[in-house]
Every structure is written in C-alpha cells, then in structure tokens.
Amino acid sequence: MMKIETIYHYLLYSALQEKRFSFTQQELAKSFDYSLSTISHALKIPEELGAIKKTSKFFVLQDFKKLLYYWATVRRFKKDIIYQTYIDAPVVEIEGLVPAGTIYACYSAGRRILEDAPADYAKVYFYFDKEKVEIVKNRFPEVNNREANLFVIAKSFDMDKYGLITTIPQTFVDIWGLSDWYGRDFILALEEKIDGLL
Image (cartoon, rainbow, N blue to C red; front, side):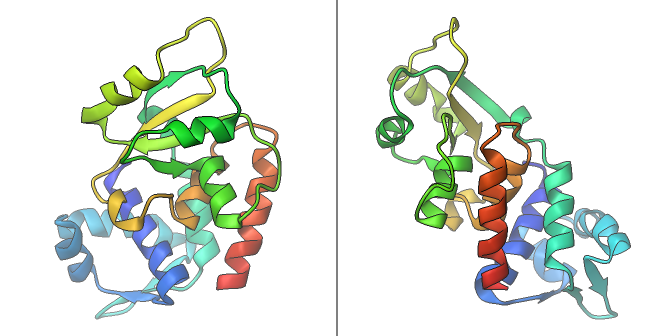
C-alpha cells in the first residue's frame, strides 16, 4: 500500500470509529514517521475535491464519502498480491485454515463486519507478512491449472494495529477494485453500514 493510502485509511478509520474529523499535518507526519511533504502530497487532491478543508492550524475531513471514493478509485491492491493459488474447499473452510498473523480482507472481512455475507462468494483474500509468505505456500501449495481462489496480499507496516480483519474503509476500498459479480452486494451493504455509523 502506498504511503498516501495509509494516510487516507487513518483519516477514514478515525472518522468512522472514533468520530474524529480534525487533524494536523505535523501530527500525521510524527505518527507515521513521514515527511511533511508526503502528508501535503496526500492531501492535495482530496482538498481539490472538497473531501478535506484546510485551515491555518489544522485540516478537517469534511466529506467522508468523497475521500472514500477517491481512495477506492486510486487503490490498486492487486499489485500487492504476493501469492495466489487454487484450493479445492469451501471458502469458510479455507478461511479456517489460514495461518496465524493473517488479516482477513475483502469478502472474508466483509462477512465478519456485516455479520453475514450479503452474497455467496468464491474467493478468499487476506493480508500477510511478505517475509513469511513461505508459511502460506507450505500450507496452500501452488496449483496452476485452475483459476485461483486464494490470494495473499502484502501487509503494510501499520495494518496490525487495526485488528485481524481489515477495517470498514479498507474492506470497502479493496472490494471496490474487484470485478466479481458479488462484489456489488458487498459494496452496497458496506455503504449502508457506513451510513449508519456516520
């Protein structure tokens, strides 16, 4: 995940889960150990879109949905897929076999967030440490003659602090970038969940 995306994630998560909408660039730079220029770059287009509003001392996330949709359109998480294979088992069984340290993503996360899947799904995505991907490969050997249904995405440095499933904004954004027909049902259900929390 790009540095600017970790900023968008933090802003959206803070607004949704902590009802916090105002921040300072200094605070973000210190928290993430990023340069001020990186923070400024991350905020440039969201400011132009009206998703955030800057003042002399701080900035405000004034349109949650605009930032969420902007992040969804620029997110290309498929480039972060570090392993994929086919497992001949139901998705719930596959999910139960993932190794420790896994962060459930996409439909697996959506099912947990929504407490029920809004549609049947056939693919399992999860985030995992890139340096430990051999653990996954040993558990789920490579199969090349079938369409993949298990995808491992490289964790970013800050993901563990959010828990064992991706956050609502992260889940929304990741599913947005998928082309599966059932993704739309998940997107609509997540939007409804977001509306109820804002």
